[in-house]
Image (cartoon, rainbow, N blue to C red):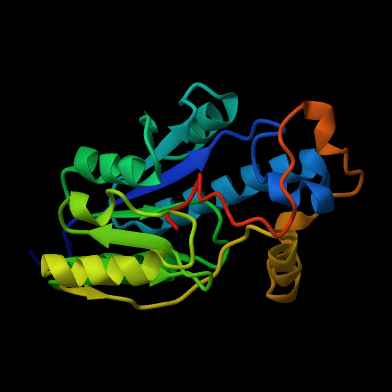
Length: 240
């Protein structure tokens, strides 16, 4: 295939609907539940914008709990993307479903990494096009923010202890055991805790916080379990 028409590499984005009281709950103490919900929307839109702008292949937004939320419908009207409902199961099952459905080399990302750029996505696609079986962008917390595969690899996702600092180490072990070649072009960071919000401001992502978090409402008003800010990330909307 010529460089003028490179092999398409699909991009699958796993996203949770911005439903008040169900997203970014560890940030609600800092931003308020409304602010946390607004940040979820902005993160998802940013991920979609970058995936589409990268131009590496078809983009699919994998929606939780389903694709019917008005925000997802708005994105589908604004951007050239497909909507799919995330299946039941843990994070590994949901990522594997994205690879299986694409039927082509695919990058899977979440929405919690504002530092992920168009160039990162293009680099990851090039890794797969240039012969590697896999590409992974480790996260500083021990997980990963992007994984790309030429073909589905169920053994990379089954019986994984997600949302721990050992995910990337175990993923490397499994890649080696299966006999896959891979590259790790970049290490990035995601936003799970209040300290990550402060880092956003320091590293130039403060625009994503403009106008939110001014009047926080206590999370108990919405009846969902409160988790302290230092609780481990739940990984529900990102590959980590």
